[in-house]
Structure formats: structure tokens, C-alpha cells
Amino acid sequence: MIAVIADDLTGAAELGGIGIRHGLKTEIRLTVGDSTEADLLVIAADSRSKDEAAAIEEMTRITRDLRRLKADFIYKKTDSVLRGHVIAELKVHLQILDCPLALLIPANPSLGRTIRDGHYYLNGEPIHHSSFSIDPEFPIHDSDLQSMLHTKARPLPIRKPTEQLPVRGIVIGEAQSEDELHQWAKKIPPKALLAGAAGFFSSILDLRYPINRPDIPPLKNPVLYISGSTFEPNRNLIREQAANGGPVIWLWSPGWQDSILTNLRDRRKAIVTMQPSGDPALELRTRMANDLSPILSQAKPAELIIEGGSTAYAILQQMGWRQFIPEQEFAQGVVRMSVPDAPGLHVTVKPGSYAWPPLIRY
Image 1 (spheres, rainbow, N blue to C red):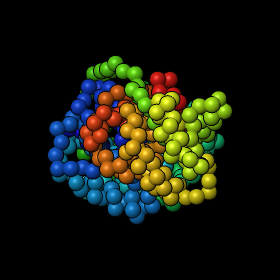
Image 2 (image 1 turned 60 degrees about the vertical axis):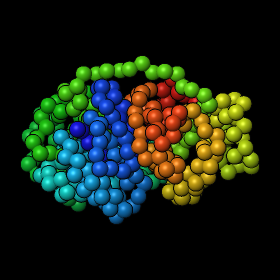
Image 3 (image 1 turned 30 degrees about the vertical axis):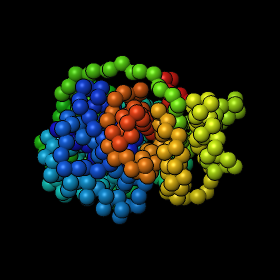
Image 4 (image 1 turned 135 degrees about the vertical axis):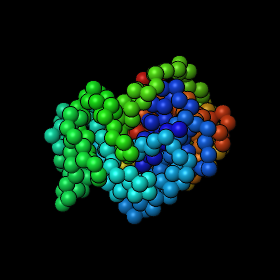
């Protein structure tokens, strides 16, 4: 059994999608549990939305619980652009799993996210020139990896796939192409904790399992979209929908609850979002989850599509759903899952910074 610890729900779903792409029986959970029959068990934490102390506490608990399941190997899914408490969490995993070395490869070349000469690039431009510079919780102001990871005082070793690795500690692997990711996957040191983005994990599975892409059935109606993303291109899509008379409902506007129910009944679709505000992101997510849960219970959509990992985690946790079975991968990172605790419902989650695939675009 392969186990994954992900620092947010959309990252967990992304790796779950890679699992089903390779024909693995895959399960995503919010808690570890006592046993599993899955080939790939993915644990979705919510540590990226917490402060560092709370993130360490959560990862300590998850890692101890997961160690008891005796997985063949454990992969730590981090944010591809290194938001969150990456180094603090890796140190927890190394200690509890008794691993001497962590190999961290966050680059994801298929999405234009590459690392070269100690700097991070998005589509060839330094990462801090992108909209990640205005991320509400982890804004990126420098493309230098040591700055992004807050390790300038004690720099971490950075290596190319052709270079030798140290035997202990945390090392960052550079990658500019899918080929370089596969080079890394072929030179994994023994007893190393493997960590990074979806691209590295996919390269590891490519060497072990054939690719199997099942057919994707159309969405069922009614469909409820919920967006908690601040990513500007996707915000623009919602504004376009609203300008063209689409079923866009602004949270906490007058009569918003009735508008959701009416649109789901009459138009078979509703798009729920909120206006930008200066309120703390955690407070907004919590309020959104609390206020939407009775609507979800009443409306019972066939498809629930949520944009933004922390938003998705807050809503699904509030609904009391803890287990998810990935069934289809619409695109990288956009995964449709059944919910054993809610028969008839499918939940699809998408990272806020990823583009919408045509099959499920608003």
C-alpha cells in the first residue's frame, strides 16, 4: 500500500486522481483510520490553512497514525509553489518515520512550474511576478527557493538530477521538464522520505504501474459550484457568467439562500461565490461552511464542485463527510469522487490556481 500525506484537500484529490489514472484502488480520507483495503491511501490534512504550531500538531498526529498501517512507502504532498509550513512539516515526518533524508521536488513542469538555479519559475517568469504574489495567506515576494521556504539563515542543499545527494537532512531537487522528474524517480535513495508536487509523484508511479484512463461520464444535474478562490482568472470567469445572466449567487447578499435553491431547481445549476473582503481567510471559510451546510442538506445536488482546497476542506468537514472514493480525473488536479456518507452525490474539487477543464467549466 502507498500512503500520501497531503497538506490540503485539493492536493490530496490531485494525487488520488493520479492513482486512478494508474489503475490503483484509491481512497481519500480526512482521518487515517485503523485499516484500509486501498492500494493508495491519501490523507487530506488542512495544515496549510493553520498556523505553524497547529500544522505541526496535525502532522504529528497523522504521521503517527499512518505509521501503524505499515505502508510500502509514504509520499508527502506539498504545495507546488511551496505555500504553507513545508519545512516544519517535513521535519515532523522525518523524526516520526525515522528517515535520514527527505527529497523535496516541488516543480510541476506540466503546469509550467519549474525550478532552475535555485529559483522558481511559472511559465518562464519568476514566480513572484504572478498572481501568487497576492495570495491572501502565503504571498510570494521572491523566486529564490531559500526565501520561499524561509531557510536563508540556514540554506538547504539544492541539487540537479545529475548531482549526488547528501545522506541526511532535507534536499531540494530542481526540475525543468518531465524528463528530469523521471530522472529523479529513477534515483530515489533508500529510506528517503519523498515529497513534493503531483508531478514527482506521477513520475514515481509511471515507473511502477501502467496508465489506465477510464471514460468520463457527463455531469448529473443539478450542479452546485462553490468558489472560495482568489485566483484572478477564475474570478473573471465568474464575473463573465454574472454579466451574461448566469446563475451566480453572491454569498450573504439579500435572499442568497433562496436564490441557490431556486436556481438549482429551475436552471439545474448554481454558482456560489463571495465578494472580496478584508476579513481573515480562515474566518471567511468557516462562515461559508457553516452557512452553506444547511443549504446543501436541503438542496441535495447531484454534483458538488468546489474550487479552493481550504474551502473544500471546511465545507466537507462541516457536512461530516470523511471518506471519498476518486472515480474520474477531469484534468490534472480536478478529480470527481463519490461520497460513501452521501449516496448519489459526487464531489469534485479543484485547486484555486488551476484552470477549469472544458468538461466542467462554469
